[in-house]
Image (tube, rainbow, N blue to C red; front, side, top):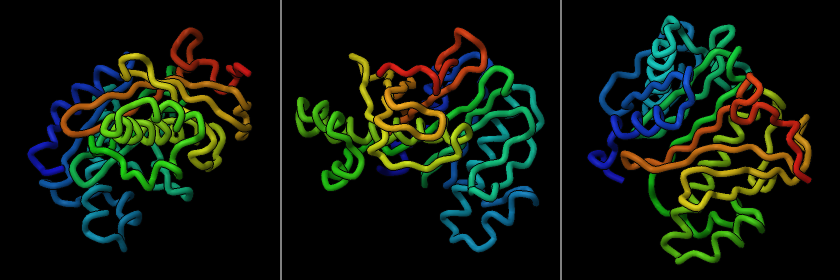
Length: 243
């Protein structure tokens, strides 16, 4: 994917459409801005290569834009001991970045327990990665599609699993492989449901969580929000076992 294909305004617009009310969105370009960060963030990239520094700095700029979108000060977002971003007290958030774009979402924890977001290039997945990423259920779904569609949807599937992992991690503090959950897309592939195949912390086998997935600006975008208010999306996760 070349630079001109990365349309950040289009990516921002899609993220804003996906984001529920009271979720702030921020986007930044890691290719044009210097890799400057706030002092509290600097230790995280002290020994990083230039590419990593640019992406990290863009992610933090995106996070501050997202914070300002919900009328919060654009403060430092240091890296925690587990390498995840440390958002301000009372704020849930998620950051994602690659060499062409960085995106962040944030929200008050009074309304959202956790958030998960991921961006990937809108390109077909390499066939040799299918086995590592897909469960048997995932492969059955993909096998019904033409090869070109199958590999692009596999990249969407990968992105969806990344967003699910980010959303669940603050609850379980556990890392798991791609085989822990399968993804089912809706008919127009604008949303998905992840179904867990084993227990992970408080997540029961059979639990489901829903999210959104789409393409814009040369990227695939996946987003998961775990509502803290009854009736909001995924409010009962991880206690929504279906099996």
